[in-house]
Length: 141
Image (cartoon, rainbow, N blue to C red; front, side, top):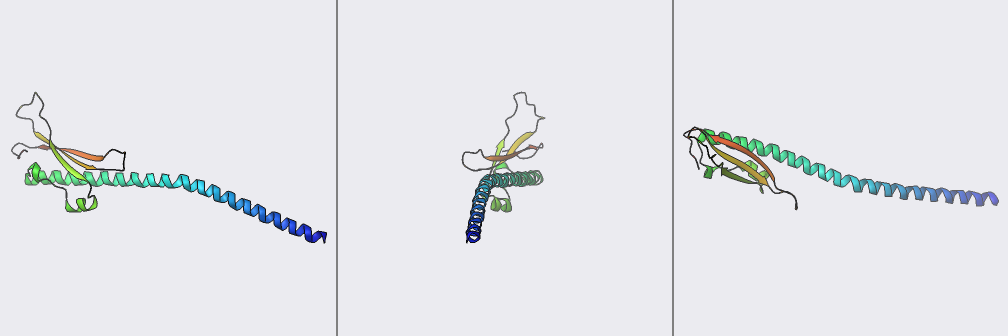
């Protein structure tokens, strides 16, 4: 009879220790996930921002080549349909650069092309800019 009682007691203790280990493992797993998920989300946002920077710079270089090739006026400059479909919230801004006070007629006119994209709330807009120097004889804004 005594052996039977000891056997039940040891089985009960084993179940209790397994249950305790399971609870502790769940708590540790929950803490690890709680720390890992925000980190992975931040990495994902950073990769998206880097991808936008790369694609926006490619788009601005394509626009610059188009301006030089077709002698486009600044009012006719637009991003490609592919880029606007991918980043519908992104906006292109074209602004002429101010001429320096000591400017001579030999200085070329410049345009600053900027693509801005709003990010999450309370974060500054993501922007990529390039300056295009217009050659003599090209139309100016």
